[in-house]
Length: 267
Image (tube, helix red, strand yellow):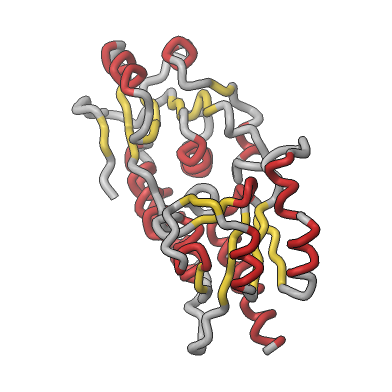
């Protein structure tokens, strides 16, 4: 994975770091030296989405607005490759060094991102250590030829297909992904009728994205689904464990591996 940054080179590690991307927030908080991070994105405090929400509580949250970012007097800003071009341009004009990262859609992307981000922080040793821990703790390849069919069902009846982090983690844990086998794109609707007809061995429901109930998430507990999957193994996966690539994916893989072992015992 390549690190895209401005041509300005840092002679010393940055002292005031701001991150304005949820997935980068979590790695910055895990890798930075004490006091090195001065602000994170406004989503970093959300326990439903962020694996590092507790660490983020001590820091101010900034939105993707130039005035809010510059108010933190950063000498390095982490942002993703899809950050608004006008924000990128204005930060460059203000002389702020930027580190932009492409999307990480596999576990291996996450390992590479850890190393690259740590280097940008001036902490390559911390990155090497965390990357090694991720590789050592990831779930071992599943034994046997049988690969159970799993289906991820999200709010509004969406699922995740090829090219997503969730699909990569499912494959690593020894599952087939229903959405991928239906040739679905990364994020597409999975009709309840198709889900029932496919009869997956594992139904993965994501935990609520907030404390507020919504019609979008109520579909996941639809009466037809409860009746159809009454005896199907169901796994509730917290958003925070596989929404972003990073060390938290190890916990997601552990949950998937445990679910697969449970299915094997029932065969």
